[in-house]
Structures are given as structure tokens and as C-alpha cells.
Length: 142
Ligand SMILES: *[C@@H]1O[C@H](CO)[C@@H](O)[C@H](O)[C@H]1NC(C)=O
Ligand SMILES: *[C@@H]1O[C@H](CO)[C@@H](O)[C@H](O)[C@H]1NC(C)=O
Ligand SMILES: *[C@@H]1O[C@H](CO)[C@@H](O)[C@H](O)[C@H]1NC(C)=O
Image (cartoon, rainbow, N blue to C red; front, side, top):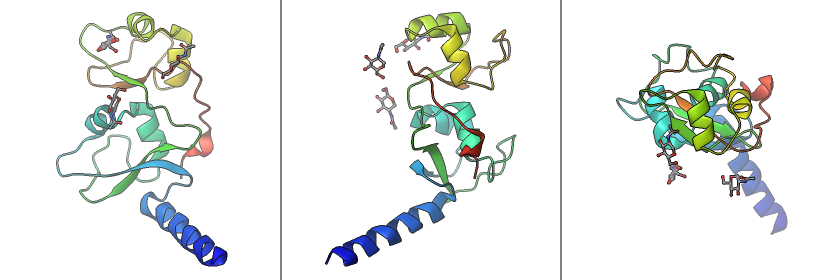
């Protein structure tokens, strides 16, 4: 009985890995018709950086190759920020950080795509506003 259950769990684990192709995927998402990356990020609480980093093997830098039915990974276990802010007109990093009760330094650490001057954020971009450092590693990419 135990080995039967263990075998089922093992098969399930392999199946989950096979879906998005990302090891240790914490959250998976099936792309819907009309989806685009920042819209998925905003709806699913994933930062723009994290969605791109985790799926760098399958989503191109412009995010113009998503297809309906494709399973992508939203976050890897232990490196999954799900506290986010969608950038609105007039936002800046100091205000976003203050509003989230975190330092600007932590905001920049958790969003490596944002430059030190915070001059390259855009409306609709999704930033991780978690109050802890997310330990992103390059190996996050599949
Ligand atoms: C996203 O985060 C908000 C705020 O915490 C929460 O209300 C919402 O249910 C979350 N959505 C998903 C899809 O996790
Ligand atoms: C401030 O926080 C509120 C509630 O979490 C959110 O709705 C709003 O968009 C935030 N504004 C900024 C500038 O971060
Ligand atoms: C960090 O955020 C979580 C919710 O995401 C909250 O429960 C916790 O109290 C916060 N910790 C600090 C030190 O602000």
C-alpha cells in the first residue's frame, strides 16, 4: 500500500515537472487566448522579472511567443514572490516601496530588472513588493 501511494506520488511529481518543464515549480498556469506577460503577472501575482526568469527557456524576451494551452510556471518553490504591485502612471520606486512598507533597497533587490535609478519601470509592469528578500538564483531558469 505504501509503495503504491509512493509510486503515485512519484508519477504525479514527474507529470508536474513535465507540464511547464520547470523543476520545483510552485505554481503553474495555462496560457489563455489573448494573454500577454504583464497581464498574466498582474492577474496571477507574479512580478514581471519572475515570470520572465522562471520561463526564460520558453518565453522569449519580447514575450511574443505565448500560445493558448501552453503551461508555464509562475514561481519556483522557495523563490516565489506573490506579493506584487502593478505600476501605475506617476508611480516611482520610493512611493511604491513606502506604500508596501519596505525599503527601496529591498524593492530593487527583489526586482533585478529595475535599474538603481528606478528610471526604467513602465506602466503595467509588475513589481515584487514582498517584505523579505526572495533568494533568486540563476538556476531558476529551466
Ligand atoms: C493576488 O493577491 C491579492 C492580494 O493579496 C489577492 O486578493 C488575490 O486573491 C491574489 N490572486 C491570485 C490569483 O493569487
Ligand atoms: C498602495 O497600496 C494600495 C493597497 O495595497 C494599492 O492599491 C496601491 O496601488 C498602492 N499604491 C502604490 C503607489 O504603490
Ligand atoms: C510581511 O508581510 C506579511 C504578509 O505578506 C505580513 O504578514 C508580515 O507581518 C510582514 N512582516 C513585516 C515585518 O512587516
